[in-house]
Amino acid sequence: MHFVGYNVSNYLIGCVAFLTAAYVYGTWPYSYWRKRGIKGPPMYPFVGDLLSIVRHGFMKQTIDDINKYGRVHGTFLTRIPTLVVADIEMVRQVCIKQADKFTDRTQLGNQPSPLDRGITVLRGQEWRRVRNLMTPCFTSGRLRAMFPLIDDSARDLVAQLSSYIEQGNHDDAVFQPKKDFSNYTMDAIARTLFAIQINTHADPNNPFKVNAEMVFNVSLRSPKLILLLMMPKIVGPIYKFFNVNLLPQSCMDFFINSIRENLKIRRQSPDSSKFNDFLASCITAVDQTETIHDKQVKGLSEDEVVAQCFTFFLAGFETTANAMTFVAYLLALHPESQTRCFKEAQAAASSGKLDYEGVQELKYIGQCIDEALRLYPPVVFVDRMCNTTTTINGYEIEAGTSVRIPTHFLGTDPEVWGDDAAQFNPDRFSPEVAWGRDPLNFVPFGIGQRNCIGMRLAQLELRKGLAEVLLNFELLPNDDTPALGKLELKTTGLTATKTPINLRLKRRSAEK
Ligand code: HEM
Image 1: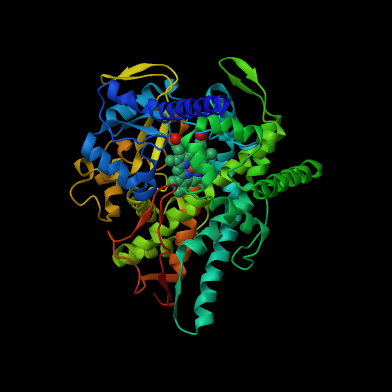
Image 2 (image 1 turned 135 degrees about the vertical axis):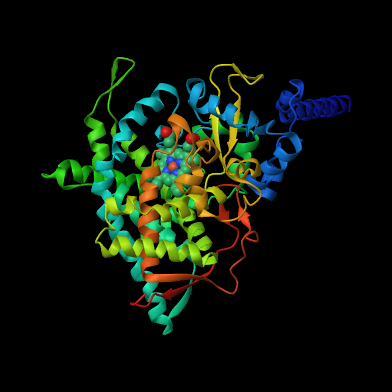
């Protein structure tokens, strides 16, 4: 009897100790900003403000927090203290003037192999080495050489949209831009990055498409992800040890094996110079050496090539498809802007110039793309991890603190963009109006040395794809297309609409 009582009390003491330890673990980081007198939203044990973000998305949450706690306030990314900075001069210090103290992105946990070698997550000198080796993949010469692959993808897109009209036997048809533009950017990425010739419009069960969709279906509500977000320091290493991936392993294997296979074919090809894609550039980077701080550093290993191809696919496919969807939506709601885009594309095409050079000259289409990226940036914030304690504008930012720059807020700040900041007005980006505006107010591709390396490829895909679509079709709102301001967004990951947008396509008559 005595022993039973002893065991019960030991058990109770154990429980209390465990619960106390769990409570302390679940709450201790959240006093960080309060101790420093910096305001911020309330945080709950273990989850911080995660529940609120899942409910409202990063975009709305950040705007509400800035309105309540100011342009500089403290929050947390999981347990990492994060200073939200929507003050342009501070952004300039973090991303440009003191960029060497903020080279890295914030990491939530260990990435599975080979993504842990991908450029987006690499740190310090390793990142610099890979960035220097990858930058030549996006020079004008390389992009010009890749252009025919984008051209082919745009042709397939137009053929697919035409087929909707032909099937319906009318001169118009309803379509979902997100679906068809995702197919277009997927085809373009498969061709330019993986050297795989696919037509996902005609072959929706193509393994490349099926696997890619599984990769992008990882939800913020996934229990594996929630556990990682709640206890990154504990769960991250456990996932690493047991090789637990947030992305389905079979999908990862599919992409890794196809890249390896293609690399092998290239290496064995007697005439490798005939290839003009990204993989060809990567192979050049394998044999190259790089000089950093007067030191010779090695080229890319094969594993690193695989990691970069996969990373570029993840970073480049959905972002570009979402951006293109938003431009199409905005043009359907603004017929006068759409007519200007059409006329510009028509003028370029009639002088035989929808080639690489001609596409760069599509100035007004470029302005419409910028305006869509301003209103709906696919990436709602840019973040940097501080590696050396510094003080900016009176705020001490300690090493290990993250800085979050809300791209959407900067792009819609009424103090900069005026009271009509929420309206679509591509003329904001005409050279006369844009002159004198601080470029840091519009940063959909990020800022400084760590900005989006694929920006020019994305612009090329967007301009070419949109020009070809507008040359052939008029875009109109459907009965159920939400009005501007009524579009419901999901911003827990990349910015997307909560439900797919429907638009109507009308074939342009030849004489227009
Ligand atoms: C409209 C399309 C796109 C948007 C809006 C976009 C946006 C961004 C943003 C905001 C960043 C973070 C930049 C920073 O931290 O300062 C980024 C990084 C990156 N993007 Fe893009 N991106 C797009 C398309 C692409 C494409 C097509 C590719 C590749 C083919 C790509 C590859 C990358 C990579 C590799 C990084 C990480 C760069 C580094 O860490 O050095 N992106 N992108």
